[in-house]
Length: 347
Image (tube, rainbow, N blue to C red; front, side):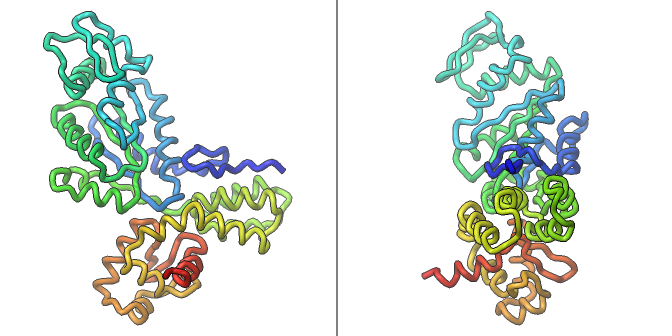
């Protein structure tokens, strides 16, 4: 049987379980005549589907007539990328082909209308934004996996200025909790605190069950339920288990070994490295079942309720933990077992 599941990170898979509510929220926000925010931030653990969601929204926004949607690399000069991508967009390129003066910046070279010579890419971009505004165009900039880099900090300052000047410019970015937190902690970038942050929750288990049942139609309902429960709603686990089950054909020791190995190599090692010691203590105090009461954590971690509340909130934002009426649950599948094995061999 040929697998219809895709393990390529960031690629929009054939079997994509849509998060329609989030897609609609962001697209509606960007398209509104009176947007509540010019920035949306998607955060979550590795493998939670941040990049796939960004790519889906990118494609949705591309179909909207008055929007110019571009992707940029947050680790390179961002303003230059934006200017270049806007100019190369066939739908709006005609707005910038004028004879008033020529502009050349690194590999970017063209003519644009204006009376004052342009000396830097920021001035050029403002002139381009003026042209787009006159034509009632909005600019949507998409950035994946942002960090607290000098390029990102410089762009955030410029973006804040563009918004203050009244340009129809919007930003959609994804990032790990620690990277987003580090970026917005810059004193001069406090506007990021006010930006809506979407912390990705697990996929709906019913959606996963229906998907598996359609693909593996000759398998029993109980088998598909077990396969679904193994994912815990973790986006990468949904694709991975579907891929493994296609080749193995049953839930057995071989499948679980390959499942654990792939989770470790492609997600969990990196996730584990970025968990601070005190948050790790909270996770280690949770039994192997993966869930317990807050009282159990107080009794086994050495922390007070106040400490636990702070660390719990951070773990929730990292996409590792959830709190259901005082019951703490690790939402990454088999991650509690991984922590025990990892800790045993940490020297």
